[in-house]
Image (cartoon, rainbow, N blue to C red; front, top):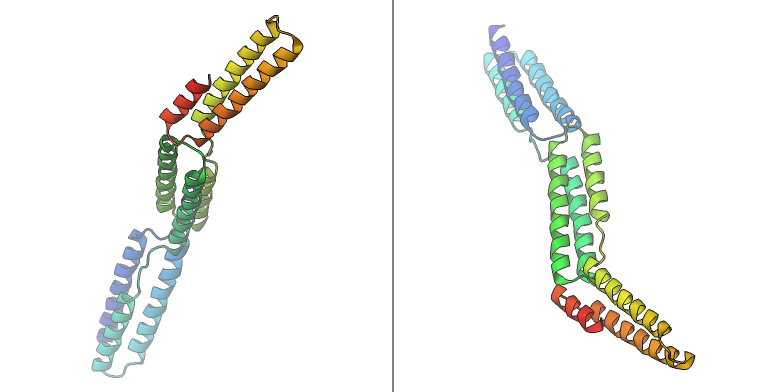
Length: 220
């Protein structure tokens, strides 16, 4: 019947519009396929109801119900991508907490957190660009790995301690070359070791780059 053919064409049109919207979304290929199966199910139901209709009014009702059911198929945010982004955020939080708990200087903490934020942005960009579930997982794992690998050690403090160690070595060498007795040399070296310990403790306690420099210069 012409009425049924027209009704089925309307159903196909509604399905095409919905499938185009699914294709245009940032869902993964697997998520798109699952959603299109839902649409196809609604198309089948609508067409069966159209075929079963015995009056023009029933054909129209079956058509309208079918169109509404297809239009109601929701295109959600990608569950795979949302979960992957949550994992990235979790890794970033853990790293930032570790940075806060570390003995880095304020300047180093700020720099390192910028690095973390950069990796988060890169990872989320890669997750958004992924077209398959497997690619989402790869982007997530790569991002989490990069965030986890960010090293939380203070280069400023390490350099300062190295300078202290070098100064102590130079002093000890001078003591060894002096004409002091062995007992006197041992006493002076103990003083040097004490100063090294004091300087290293001051460096560890410093919370800013400038304080590290001050502790180093004082020690040296």
